[in-house]
View (tube, rainbow, N blue to C red):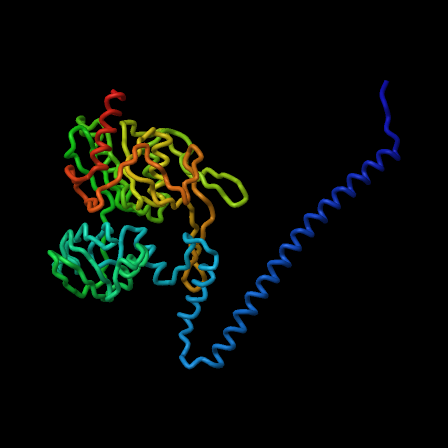
Length: 403
């Protein structure tokens, strides 16, 4: 027997449903309104404080105000107040320098360096036809001062900023050689970086050193892989990511990984609202010979991501010491005056879900480097490099089990 609902009951349900919908809508709207009001109050307080400070300074300061410098410093102060070491404000000049570096071109005196056990700079590479070569700087010279400031008091970012600077500008550099101190003046010029080095001098092993990652790195890396594929004697790869800061070009990292790993999600981002997004996937191409990855405390950012993806998807083994632990993803937004903010928007995840920000990636085989050993910029040191020696041993066992 069918049951009928009276018109009164139906209307009651309708009114109840309508009232519930209106109530929920009002609650959501009030929350949104409260949030907007809060933002307005916070902004008003911020602008009021800045306005008060600006009025006092302009009425009383003895010195002439450089408006551009003032605005840049205000922006830097705002970003600094976020307490995020990976978010940065960039001036117009820094935006241009960053863009050039992403293209594989850097403003430099023409040398590369590594920090030694005493935190001084040891020159590891001299580029031809650059001021560094013209001033007779040599590999293994120890840089102790830049413009009179002791480098042991400077961070890596501080040093890179001082070395890059404005194209055509000059600075002084103090270095020691054979116990003798020397000072030279160097000009900053445009230098094309070589970011990948390939070596076949280890029996049965291809050695690829990735020194930095930019828009040109993918083609150099692909060329190195092709060379390894063509040599029938190469049975395994050592990928050296020590002292590689990862650069700023995640698209190049994804392209490099794409030709190494099987089909599937490679790179994911963990966003503030808790959502996890797949940012890059791999196609069916893959390079399946055994591989070992060398890392150290200066393996940073996208280089850590590169390591984590190969470990998770290719079962690559990792040798060295724990990596730096920079696992955040930034988004560069250029402002109306040409400056920019490079803002952290997510944390990166390895394919198996590891968040490595602030934690780093712990190697499968922990091997400390000799305290006084400087990792060569190109051809590996087969005698003094303990980490490389262990990587060769590990790869040998992988090749044996793979064949």
